[in-house]
Image 1 (cartoon, helix red, strand yellow):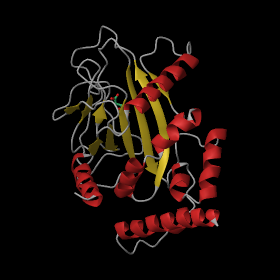
Image 2 (cartoon, rainbow, N blue to C red):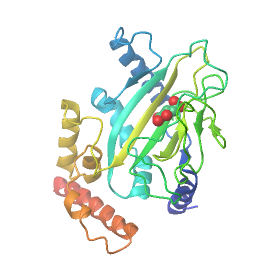
Image 3 (spheres, rainbow, N blue to C red):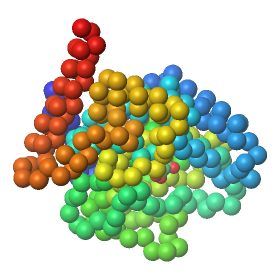
Image 4 (cartoon, protein in one colour):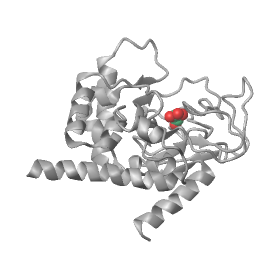
Length: 288
Ligand SMILES: O=C(O)CCC(=O)C(=O)O
């Protein structure tokens, strides 16, 4: 199968199921480095979490740019996000989290907490392009002890509701997913999902690379010195994809007010080609 056929089949499955899984996207060394980084952040903030149920660190690109930029800019992820909602892919937030073993009183069938993700809405029975997508990566193999990812297939299309008080109960039709360390589960932000409380003796680590549409605001800040340096580097290369990831969409007005007279995918293809040409022209100019 060619790369294009592969991508089309994946996109078809993603639209139908509300998620797709990329196997072994990040190698063992990268996963190990991410766990070390999570432990470092936790140690640096020791004492700031009174008896934590979980640790969450946002703005991780600014905190550790050398480790994190190749992850945020991962071509496979960004290209797939572009296939889902066009060449408008911005980093909304990059988050590292770890869940210590759950306390003894957690019921055996508990769910961590059902939710749809940021910038979503209650679906209306039709597939709609998401405004954001979540690339979730676990930093160990998931199993029944450390807790699978739970999803409700189709809930990005169907208006499945969860009554107040039921957020930690198993849902009819839920599926349990057991990604391996370094796999990425790439979700539609309308997909109902939850983690499962960690009953292993070790921490349960995860990372979320959350991309949203570049016409929206972003949750992480890109005005720290490390992100500003990345923006300067991207601007010097005329790299519009990298700039958009960092909250700088130079084509915001032209492409956001394009008239919308032809199929989106046709325009997206043209805009992607224009971005590639701009990068190539800048590289050629630098060589001369
Ligand atoms: O803990 C998990 O497995 C799920 C994390 C999650 O719900 C999320 O990233 O939105």
